[in-house]
Image (cartoon, rainbow, N blue to C red; front, top):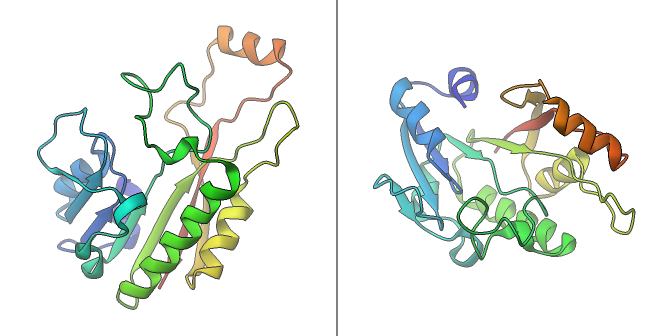
Length: 196
């Protein structure tokens, strides 16, 4: 988040995070002198600076019109199974549990709406991870799917950045689990930068 703020905003700029989670974007903006509005349906973290707003139901918050940057790190598709929803995982109502088509349609609709209300020059920083079905029964969702949705929504893509996870070191136990299930581990996410 700090790198995105440094390269794509100036002190005093307005940053919107529509799914702020635990508040990393809020903290980085505070440290770097940016004004940030962070919204989420999940209030388990008890932060008073996270405003309750459900973008999936209510669309973009009116403050989005003032945005110089939208930083969006949404819940990843099918990331949490039903055993992890709750205390340690995404809450009920998370878009992570939508079917593939509905999940992608959600972004198409919301990114189109955002493009229609933000000022010219507003930037979008969209962080995501590829997803593929280990069983081969469902079609995957990859960076190019998100890029296509962003372009069709009227945004101009300007950068594609690999964003490593906080540590690219994988514990041997996890390596063994991936090997046993014949899966490759992902060690990065992708950040797409676009401009209105």
